[in-house]
Amino acid sequence: MPINPGWRTRLLPHTNRARRNLMGYLFIAPFLLGFLLWFLLPTATAIWMAFQDWNMMTPPRFIFLENFASLLRDELFWQSLKVTFVYTLFSVPLTMLLAFAVALLMNTKVRGIHFFRTLYYLPVVVPAVAGSILWAWILNTEFGFLNILLRAVGLPKVRWLVDPNLALFSLILVSLWGLGSTMVIYLAGLQGVPDVYYEAADIDGAGRWHKLRHITIPLMSPVIFFTLVMGIIGSFQVFTAGYLITGGGPDNATLFYVLHIYRTGFKNFHMGEAAALSWVLFVIIVALVAIIFKYIGGSVHYGGRES
Amino acid sequence: MTPSSKPTSNPSVWPGDPHNHAALRRWRRFVIWLLLILGASTMILPFLWMVSSSLKDQLSVFMYPPQWLPDPPHFENYIDVFVVKPFHLYVRNTLYIVLMNEIAILWAASFCAYGFSRLEFWGRRFWFSVVIGTMMLPSVILIVPTFVLFSRLGWIDTYLPFIVPAFFGGGAFNIFLLTQFFRTLPQELADAARIDGCGELSIYARIILPLAKPALATVAVFTFLNAWNDFIGPLLYLSTNEKYTVAMGLALFRGALLQTRWDLLMAAAVIMTVPVLILFFFAQRYFIEGVVMTGLKE
Image (cartoon, rainbow over all chains, first blue to last red; front, top):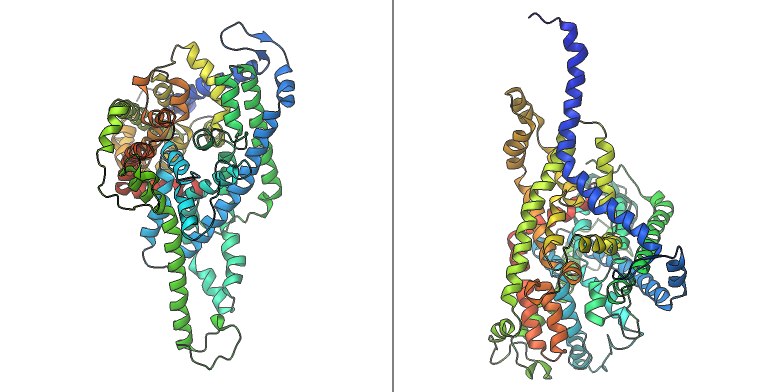
């Protein structure tokens, strides 16, 4: 070959690297473009909007922090915040606790585990709209299935969705119907705990409770932590149940935060204030997740499982 | 029955008596099984109530005590639903969105995942952490500015808001899932193809994609579910009745019927739920795998 070998070692790796970079960016280009168009652009728009008085029809007017000031004065803002916090505070831990209990029961090598897993997971795939309408019917005061059951055992009617003190509680109850997705994650985690740990504990004469406390829960803690964080992020975004089952009522008792954003922006056309509300929600979720990482993240036990 | 020779107060951890032990275990198993049955019935009863109500007539839905098996069953409810509202149009519209989403997401997500899993390039780790970041991001906080963006583009009352964004990456969750799967595929096949002069594009299309069928099936199943179930999107972007999706049609159906025709409402809810359940029963493995994969891989 006429080309001296030094040329190859000096230049080819260089061009090769450039070509590799080019190929890499070519393949991830759809994501990068999407990130720019459907994430960065809306984010920038939202920053701009939060400082405008704008109804999308007349020209926007710069009002600086007035949107934030007016939402702090708005009773409905505080109400929606309260509703969403209370919902999260009960729905997430209850779902986790029940899902964990069911997963533990299933992990005892009981007969028909696949069948049970299917039944518990089934509600998760039901469309939110169909599920919401179904529950509105089941929780109906006069003719609902739940009150029929109560009547059958001689108990009085409960005004599940009509009583302002009960409506949010009823929706928390409905959210438990979807514990199957958390349960499936726990079950997979439990099945990944190596038997040798339990066998070692058996030799030491450890009881069931000891094994749960000192083997199962520590080894499951990354999974539990993950479902906690995702559960909170998801629960702050609840919309359909409030919109369709109760319509935010009665007396704003189920006015979820996102429902409040929806009404502010798309019913009352206060687009600037809706953007400000979205930013507040974002800050709240990030702050909550940060707090959880700081105070609970430390007790998560990593490295128990090889994966 | 358990023998009377019980030397300790806590028999469940006392291993000395095999007979006692076996009886206890059987008893424990029975209790666990009973609890599971009880829980499963709670999960399933709402479905049965939905189907039962959908087969009643206008008045018998309100009857007490209720009939589980309506006599006679009013199957014509399932036809009346289509008469009252053009549900056949809603189904067609939704299937169109589903199909376009499948094409867009299966292509875009696998394409990006190939880059993240199989190619070495500058900034790869950074961009992959961006993917994970957007996966955790609460998506609703962007609905307001996104609506403004789409209305500026003139996309209101079209299907473009549901379809076009899917071509751009196909969703962080799907990219993540496929990247994780592609990483588990053996490197040797691709290396051999590369030596034979195969380009990255044909390695992606001819080697990786065929090997990744299970993961692609998981993505396809979740794509169907998301597009079929989506409510907030159609609620924001669609305004013409003929363009509605099933979710949107069902939601408006509720308002239009003023909560008096629960029989028809339940029939419509069944119509919306059945395709999802059929898919679930046939592709259960992929559902569970998808859920587990997001939960267990850090």
